[in-house]
Image (tube, rainbow, N blue to C red):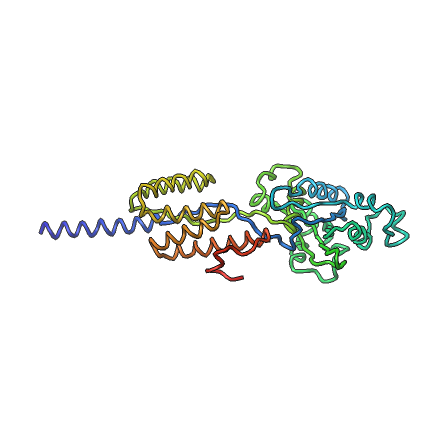
Length: 337
């Protein structure tokens, strides 16, 4: 009787632990920033002419000022930005205006004149923008793309109060033709998600619009969620979970150091290896990340780890596209273009 009671209690404890494990889960969500390719074309390392914006004068001036103030200058995203006045001064009168009216008109230069200036100066791209105030920019084609239709849908008063829409047209100067039209809509939701530092700023919308313009032609960073392994029963599990807390708080270097310490003491702790692979991806060391996730899969082949392996290679592909890098020496094994 006593033996059967003991076996029954063991079974109940085991079931309780299983239920506890399911309730607590084996994953922890954490956020990190990853690189995304330019949304339209890459102008990195090239020359781009940014024209004055059309639209309500003060708003257009604010957005243009924000574009100039937020020009990327960090390693891997540099580009040379020009203004029409700079190119006009350098042209020394050799570029004829597109029409006689432009010589005396206070209106912005036409795209023909800007393209001529850009071509003579050896500029690669021309970026022209217009603030949307009536749902249909004057420069836009007669048929609005789907993103423009969505941007134009709210009433004008609502748009001006809590959102800002800019239509950008990018020209390839070498062929003197537009290659893309894109509507960029900035609102409170975008500020909260991507630019929380601008939420309380009076110029938050225009500054965000300036930053968003550069995402069209240069790589940008974007927050994404990842799933860390959260072990409960293997040696070192508590320390892995403590390191997870650091990663959730955004301190990936400290988390990686802690996971490495766990692994040094408990070589079979595959969750630490898995999480180290994600930390390496967060630091853009994708070769290391792929090597470590393979090690984790050798220790434990599970769906979560296989998904992480595919996620790491997907992020590596995006990184290589963002900065026009060649394929890595190890190639691509899990994903396709």
